[in-house]
Length: 311
Image 1: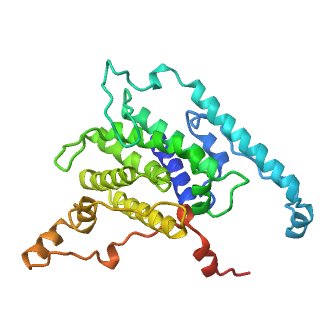
Image 2: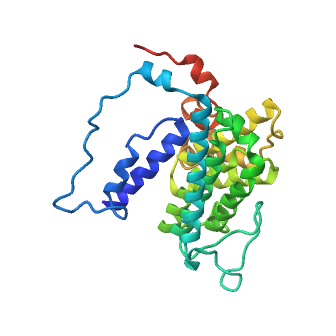
Image 3: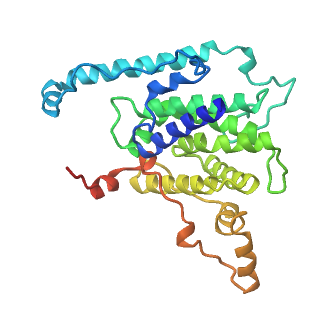
């Protein structure tokens, strides 16, 4: 039950990042489950509602001061950054990558791959660096459009995005289309997808982009987790849009990723066989199979134009 609770909390953070929205569950409730707090005490009680009346909208607007609010936002950002640093410093040597004597490091487009003692440790570090990427993109000095902020702050977040790639490369190992993965590795591969998404939208290197797309499709094939294909489509869409905006190089997909996206996935393998039997050599991705764009991570301009507010 505890693992399920924290899994929900993590998914809540993911949806908040993608949709640029608030958490479904208030953060104060995160203290109601171990390891943060006990939930099996007979005298366990929740927080009481505030006694004072809530301020009106007019009072909030009158009290709003841009300079003061900006200063408070900067202080909050610095406090969060210090929390990241404190968390990292509190981890012992058991959380360090394995040395070359224990596990020789393999090359990846991001540098030598990191391999850890256990897959959950790799998941912790991927989410850690993903959080740093998101934190820098959400700096008070950054524009509110995530797609623009991602490329404006890319020089500072590139090391974190590369670390995500190195860790994911260590989890995947020599993964091929014919590989057989264990249940723990399948879980770790699924864990890689969202951090890869956050980091990959700012990848500029041809080999880095192609590697990320190939891995995401392989994750879908080996685990059956169809979100991997959707994330791959989201990355490709982000790169094409960034190129159209003139802030990133043109995306050059490799033929293998095209084949994986168009038919050689576990979900459409039977359809692909039927198309080949009928002589159709160029399958077309059906409209129902196209992934929805994560506007909260990539862009929100169109959303604001379609937004309708009711009293």
